Image (cartoon, rainbow, N blue to C red; front, top):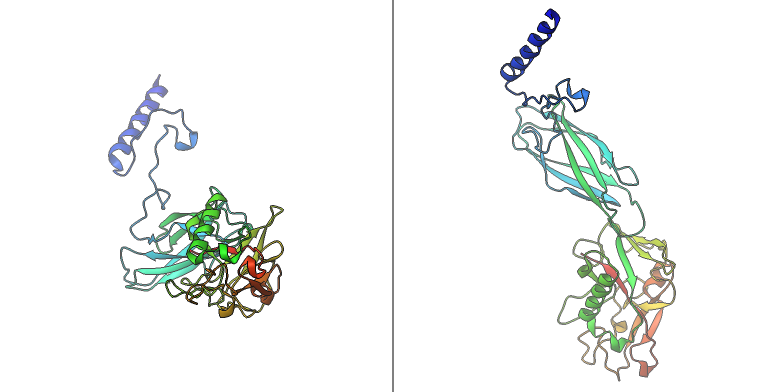
Length: 341
């Protein structure tokens, strides 16, 4: 009996200590049915080192929470306070569900100079596949730790597919194209029918001269404002259902390197370009007034430049000339649609 009294006294002393001696303790649950690791009484442990959703005050907020594979992703960090002296922060990748392991761009730490409140860090992601569809549930968890205090937070980023898709349309005579606006709209419709995300941003991969809308040059330097974007992998689905990488852009686009695979399975397609990937003025199926591309009349003698299924950089843009109207001996050909947000 004496031993039971001692245990009971120790029990109540523990409760009093936790209730009044530590004002940061969470309420105690007397339900001990939980894990024994939660201490004998199932005590709820406070959140520490950024394991909760809130970011500690001495750690930065992030401007994005979505990454794309097949490219480097940069996160702008903003601190709510500056520090009196230089502080070092360590970055670590805690977990990921992508097929290939991500990496930190440059060093796995950064120094925030006294007075500064912003810094940018990068994560390099490889292409998990050769299609342009997201893999559901892919995430990366990265931890940032303030070295001087050990304070840390786990940041979560969803991962989407970073490849850009290409596909060909059904064959059309030049007189059936009805101008670049109609061609772009048709690309969007086909992309939607194929179940491709962001279908409204698919455009005709073709040279254009116009007095009413912007000219289009697939061979211009790849950039955010160009038809082709910089540092992107362009992929397509073959007729056998296998996805393949076609080409990749960089700062020197258009390059003279051959493509990895042809743009279409076989045959020719409208391009409106010469072999050097410049717009070919005499190969755009212009209207009778000479003001708009890809709107030839049924009696037009105009021609359109076409490329062919090849890995040759030059042949991909220009292979031959095709008459724009069936009456002039022209053939119905597809054109290529490309994702261009």
